Image (cartoon, rainbow, N blue to C red):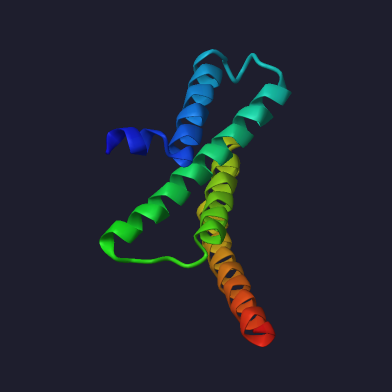
Amino acid sequence: MIGKFIKNKHVLRLSGLLTVDGLLFAGSDAARVPSFIVMVGFLLLAVTLYYFIYAGLGITKVYGLKIRGRRQLALYLTVITAGLIALQSIGQLSQRDVTVLLPLAIIAYLYSAYAKTARRNFSG
């Protein structure tokens, strides 16, 4: 059972990402590295967040909640979270940003999910 879990491609990717994250973030100081490394670290953090969110949405199946469009929802949640982290890291995150960004992201997700369903119903 555990051997099958470890051989899962998502678990292998996530463990590889966490290893690279640990090496990059433990071995560098954000104040002293070139800006290119900071951007690579941010992209690496965003990819790791995506895999965590995607895995978290997959775990909901265990509890009987099947989420359609799991990749799309994970992508939206990752973009929102990464955007908020980026704003916070440069000192520009305020309550107003959160109040504006979250409803816009929810509307964008609902609109894209509706458009995808409408296209599927129209073509099928």
